[in-house]
Image (cartoon, rainbow, N blue to C red; front, side, top):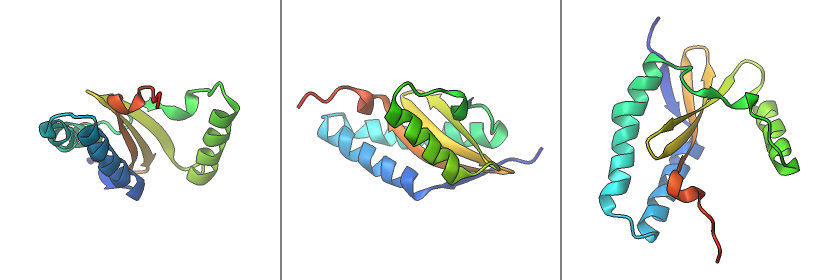
Length: 120
């Protein structure tokens, strides 16, 4: 089997910039974001190129809230039936990606620190 081709959606790139600013604002050392980028390039890309379906099938999860159900429905409508939607955890990252034939499109990424509570 040929290696999968990886593409980055604009949303993924925006998520990376948001993550950089978030980590910067939270006082994380500058090398934390550099480590994120390094992990994506050196570990995530090769993993997904070789094993495109390593992530869990995101569409099998059942949201508990009405807003979650609505979001899931909108995502399904936008993706169509020809693509799979998967998520994979790598170190401190949660990555959402679409699989379409031999192409993976990285759609979104979050750092675990971004998933905390905002009590402001």
